[in-house]
Amino acid sequence: MPIGPSLRFAQLRPDLVTLVRTRGGGHVGSWNVDKTRYEQALRDFAQRVTG
Image (cartoon, rainbow, N blue to C red; front, side, top):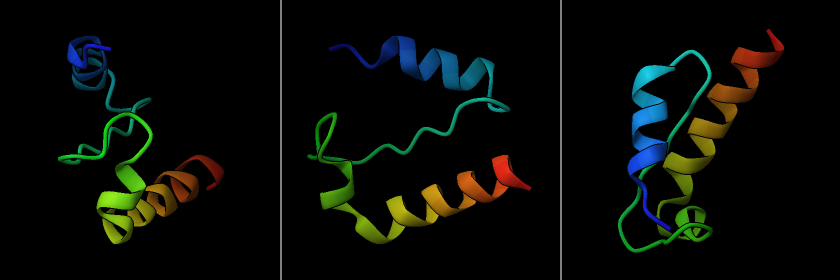
């Protein structure tokens, strides 16, 4: 699946989108490539949306 639309959406709506890009993880393997960074982004997102 092309990443272009996701990149564009993240660029246009950073208030709604948290996009974590990794190399070599594919669509569902990002956590495995950079677990620390991915989990930090997830914590930041959860904290932002839950207050």
